[in-house]
Image 1: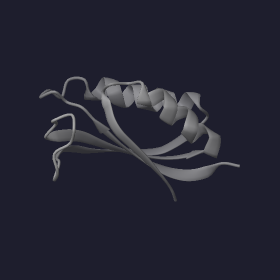
Image 2 (image 1 turned 60 degrees about the vertical axis):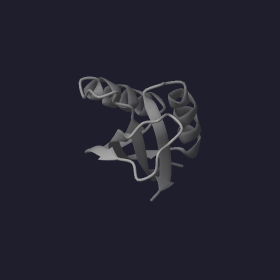
Image 3 (image 1 turned 45 degrees about the horizontal axis):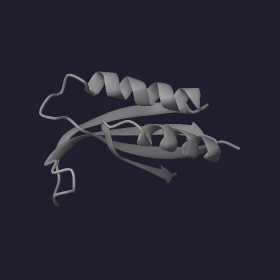
Image 4 (image 1 turned 120 degrees about the horizontal axis):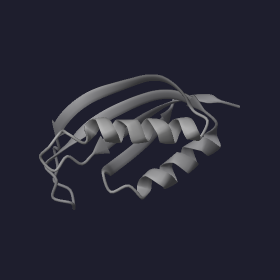
Length: 95
């Protein structure tokens, strides 16, 4: 049974915004290949972190996805994107 989700992704920038479109495309493909139906993609932009993190990154690029998927698809997407070094953080919330 498909459910509605919100996914937040924080992408590493390394001081440049050129790779953002490519990373958004990769995340979109990953979600669609797992059977998710995308409703909306919002690029929230570059934001500075309030607290420093272990990677010594001071900022990241935030992207928010709204989609419908099976619960098992979330685990699949999450495990695949953990391998991508450009994705600093991913968080899913059921709506």
